[in-house]
Amino acid sequence: MLDEAENGKRTAILSRITDEAKPFWDGLEDRVKAGRPVKPFVVSRLLKEHYNIKISETAVRHHFQNIVDANVQEN
Image (tube, rainbow, N blue to C red):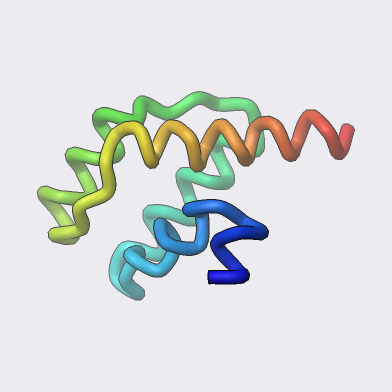
């Protein structure tokens, strides 16, 4: 609970990403960090179709928005 209080749902989202889906997820994070937007609905659908991972579109959007916000603060 302490991790979630500190980091929000990010930990919960990341815990759902399987080893098989990790390269896809890491690639998405790299693209977002490079300023290339991703479509949360499509990400959610692809995770479900190809990896049987259910993460809502809203959770995906928030996760990647947090990455964008963190990059802005660093620069």
